[in-house]
Length: 298
Image 1 (tube, rainbow, N blue to C red):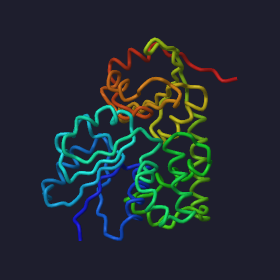
Image 2 (image 1 turned 90 degrees about the horizontal axis):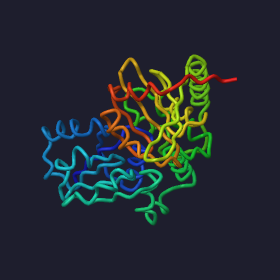
Image 3 (image 1 turned 135 degrees about the vertical axis):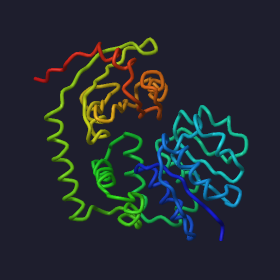
């Protein structure tokens, strides 16, 4: 049996990407769940107990590790699959690793494209439905209400979210269970209560010679949902400031020309992806925030 390890992103797309590989093989697939910011430390910690050269294949899924971890993963037995634009721009830097990095709506959809012939012989209609929902959420298309609800279920899991996701959706998606529907209702009601207590501030700023409407708010829970809400109420770019952690999460509409990974690096000493990024609340951001004015909703 080949020796394999999978490093995958901690979100819904990262879990779906892993599940697709699991559907492709009957072999056991050990995994490590991580994030872009934690990957380097997690990978180095793993190498202290494991030798890279002893593995037939090390998969790295849905993670742009090119800007801070390239030198430690650039080996012939490392197989990298990612869909973020920021990674595409740096993929030529790799010399030895097997690189499958292309701008795509989601990493899971990219993996499906790569192995379409094999997966079509394996995946049922419900499995493909699950992939569609995950891709819909990660691409921020949000054509289907079930995709947001699926993400709510995912982040409600306690402990190992990837394993819980596989346990619930190993055979794909047909409908939510009664228990899952209760969780979704609870999650949606909780979100509505949080929104009622939020204040919003907006500003139009010039970025790369184009006006961009920015909306900012303060929250320490349900950050992703609130960031999406800022876009729904008219923001081109939404900033969610968490005063407890001193961090700022940033989201944008797909049509917006700004690369958030670059904006966050400059403004927040952070990084991330083109459409979703973040960093710390820097002095530069505090100065930037002074141009924002309160929004009054009628």
